[in-house]
Image (cartoon, rainbow, N blue to C red):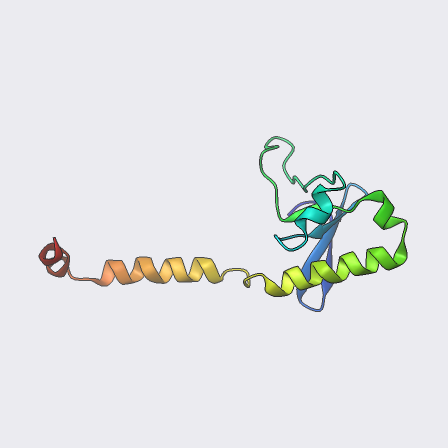
Length: 112
């Protein structure tokens, strides 16, 4: 997918290593920790620099401090725990489309 190595806590994908750079998962709860230190978001496509994902580069000072790195990794695992399971949004959207298709046309016309 991105040419790197994924980091997992059991089944939770919380980080990755790409091009010798460690990225951890972020959300609104921990994103400010990264942006305040000037960390860059993970951008998987060189030809589409505007596309980024919910992963940010871990700052060098955090990499140099084992305790800090452990804490940042734990926060990223918590982010992964809060995130919706992959595919659930697509299933709900597909179910809505199917439900719309099943409605009789007469019922749709009566509502207008």
